Image 1 (tube, one colour):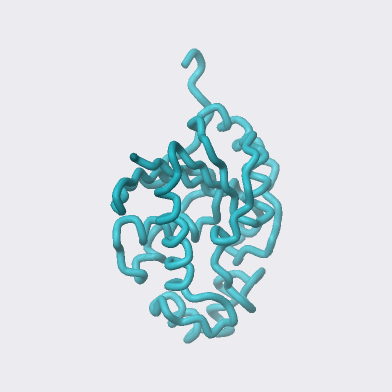
Image 2 (cartoon, one colour):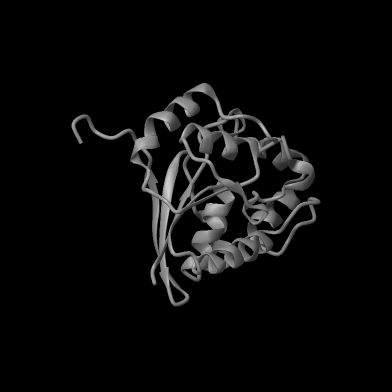
Length: 194
């Protein structure tokens, strides 16, 4: 049995536009409109999961998806940095930022380590191989990164080297504990006449 998982990153939100650590804001009007127009491009799915964040729930809704919130798919907990821009944190705590980006086991900012999120998402992805058919999941960008790291056996240090653009789909197909990966396909409205 081959399992197919499509991870969809959320539509644009103000925190993404400002390079700010996510603080629970909503997707913006442009992001919502793009998600609505991309809805027809989604594959049919037997199961829909959603990260438990405002922007993922709103993106799922704009895409016309009624998904179940899955706690294991929550974004990376950045602790006291939540709501700050990366530039603000880099000025206030340059050594901590450097350590956080360079050491996947470090989490002294009061949040979660990169390795922890990779392991959490990896366990969820391994469990998804029991799903018969296709699973769609609207998830935080960090979840997409962690799934990619896990799926192809990358070291956790590769996490920050994977860019995840808003409203893109990352497809995984798996069988017998092995995954194939296709990264970052833009969701788009179907071509006229298609």
